[in-house]
Length: 184
Image (cartoon, rainbow, N blue to C red; front, side, top):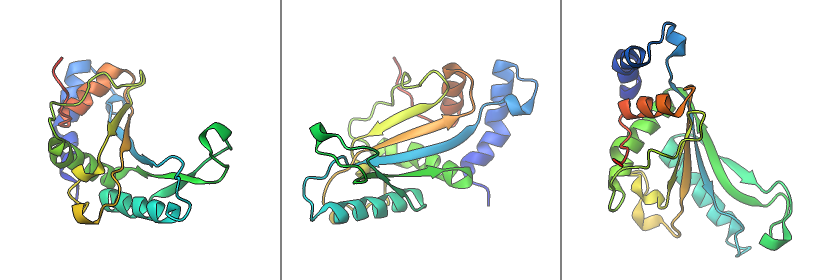
């Protein structure tokens, strides 16, 4: 079974992009390459609760993405942050292929509209190479998360990596895929 958004990309979006930017080679047409979802917990103050918070984050992120996350650890010790090398500081998952399209579809059509006072996302958060990073304050916007079982609200960063050469191409691609950009 082909994800709905992937079929939409192949049938309509790629054709619209080809006409707008005048691509001659089909491999030139920008597409989604991967989506990286990261939950950063920072230094956890309670030593006893550290494992539980990390385990909860891993299970919640696996519910949201459908893939088992990797636990991220501190690369070096920083005394000012009371951080030691090797301490768990978050978890992340990299989505590609069908799972990526399914996640993007749920993000755009289910999760983002559930944000309180949502007026669209900023069209200016591109990095200059066609990649977009979105910060979410509460992971409760995803329908897979059970509100009653949450101890602590967690934010997350979602980075959408595209094959676009410029921000304009990436913005057009994501707009055609349904990303709700704010009107300036």
